[in-house]
Image 1: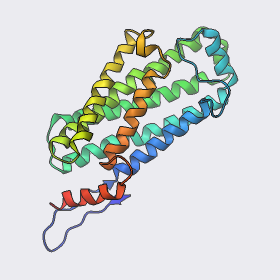
Image 2 (image 1 turned 180 degrees about the vertical axis):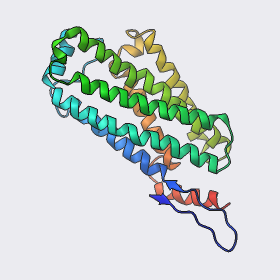
Image 3 (image 1 turned 90 degrees about the vertical axis):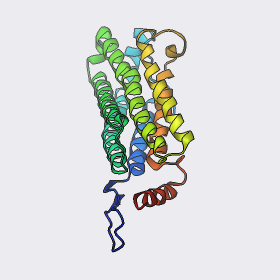
Length: 248
């Protein structure tokens, strides 16, 4: 969906020109969830291994499920593109509405970094699934650790910067409801705390294979909510609100 500039005889300000962030967020979220399906128990009897499982289990998985891992990596790599576009669109839109806070630049940096980490994670998984790689247990484990760091703390901390960088100026300017802005700040802090998994990879919350992915899922839902300015079920109302803000 593209918002066209509009100017009439009354001298109203033009609308922001660019793709609607809600649409981009939907594409990103759809590709991400689609990337999960091939490597979940919905599609296979084997679950995707944690890097902290015994090496034999990790090697066995990538040998047996290489085709599913390739498909997952392809879809995840595809999700990296709309994530970067989302960051560019949202920061441009904030600037259009007059935001001059440092948070806008922080959001842009965080969004591009999260997009890069998503792509790196996908490319590492694709490499793991290639013939012969899983024959070397040490190499397989090293690449699996890399995919975890790229798609875990690397991605989560970067996406936290994107979300907090959007939420703070948008909340201050009244472009988002206060509860949505504060939830963005909370997720931004949680994203930074995910870096603790690098210091304590086998302790407490970070030992669970899906600990960091759970944060990533929450952040992705947050991306959709901020993109539409709503909880996701009244997108048209969000569009109408943006038009009203642009013409105020």
